[in-house]
Image (cartoon, rainbow, N blue to C red; front, side, top):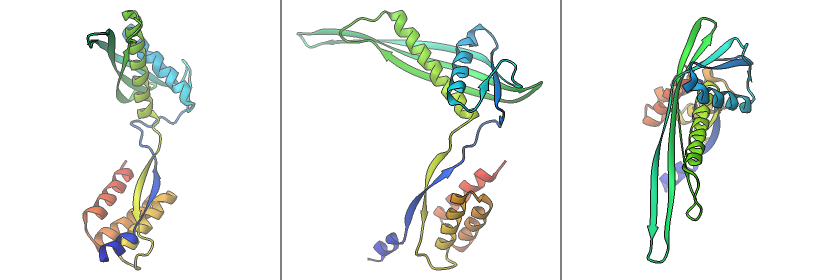
Length: 223
């Protein structure tokens, strides 16, 4: 019965955690450049993804340049065969992978190097043959699209929702009340106050839950 009462005192709320980009690029224009011909598919896919995202304009004269280099792709074929004695069926699957490194330039300075990877798989129909060249092109195009999403997410990631436990009926001054105050402060965007309350909660009751929450806030607060 005591365990049930304690559980009833807790509630879970969702808090939006701001994203942490791999590099800070707060401009409204960027240029996307391929270092060589092998990197042109990666650069084209990244430029298209950034245009779709809407957070920045892709222009060749932009002050921030995203230079794709060390690019590559490969694919793997899988031939599938099914024969149950009455029907003989075959199809081909292609798994494609792509990778690239993107240097973020601000004039002559290199702000960061981003490593991106993508993959996708395409299969033909069991009943209708598809030219292998078409399957390979489709799989590689999709792999480059996946690569572009990976790189764009590193540059301009979306916020995420996390679940936090709070204790609305906690007694004043207890670790649970301090944890609840920390989460409420975090929810309002006051990270400094959230850290202060979380540290007090850990001091009052040093347990794995309060420590885990405190370390999460500290990671977000670190430069």
